[in-house]
Picture 1: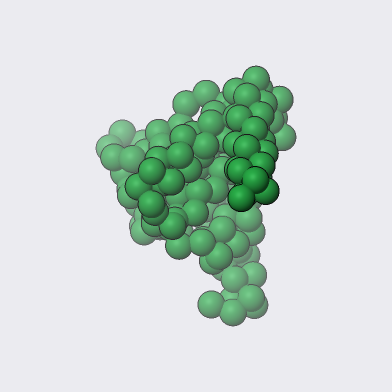
Picture 2: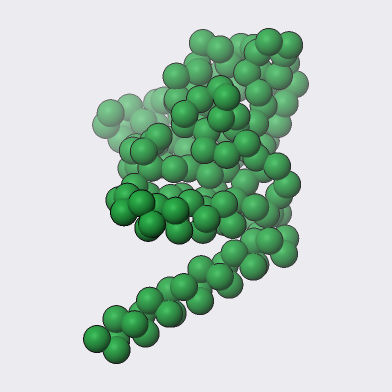
Amino acid sequence: MTVSELSQLADEIRPYITDVVSRTGGHLSSNLGVVELTIALHYVFNAPEDKIVWDVGHQCYTHKILTERREKFETLRQDGGISGFPSRKESPYDVFDTGHASNSISIAVGLAEAKKKAHNTNKIIAVIGDGSLTGGMAFEALSSSLLTIIYTFLQMCAK
């Protein structure tokens, strides 16, 4: 799609989310706030090979719409319908059944370690909001990631 078409897609997704959530309930503002971000992630990265990890999952509706669940989106949070959060049972595009806030970076770090051991070249992306960044798990994961980067850099310099 062209950038103009992507912009038009965003303009079509917002009222669709609003309409469905007005009937089914769900998280409206967090989803409306990440429409362009989600479109950009799916435009740049190659999911499901590249892994997009949603923190908490309150903002995954556009992701669901873009990943083969547009028709099922009408059943959001309904008995027998699709989940309001990422669900591995629902789609290979959902990497992790989200739980508590602040865990996406930790999950992404773990996936990156597994990726290294398996010699995969796929990308790992953590989507985390400002509210979740205040959690201790996020800080621990960032600290772990920074230490890994520093260690790798020092190993490269020593060669």
